[in-house]
Length: 137
Image (cartoon, rainbow, N blue to C red; front, side, top):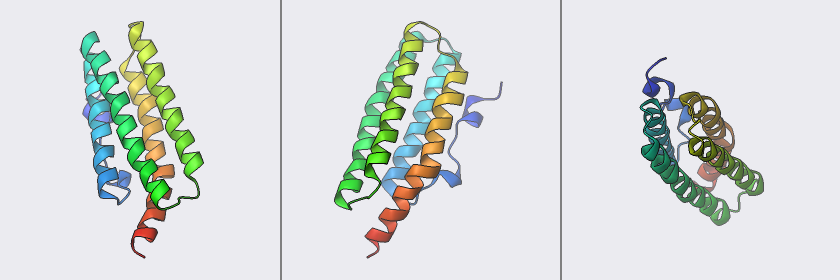
């Protein structure tokens, strides 16, 4: 298998153009890398700790995006918030697998990475495009 940092990494096409959101997205990627590395080393306590951190960080990040949506009256906020709920479910699923000692790198690489990157490239890009127009007014 390739190095996990090659599989889960920041690329320029993930930039939404809003500094604090991009910074937090980079941190998410770092957390996913750390989670995959801990799974690869079979470090159960670190896996649990990283999932805990991921869960808390997701809440911080989602609150930031939701603050932007509220302040600028984003018309698609309900859809976006529902997408955040789906991401939280994915984290819960990771935790369940970790609790059973069945979590694999592929779970992070396929499920969470594809969901997270897909979310950035679609829903977050739409939000950012809306915000950039509003902020420049």
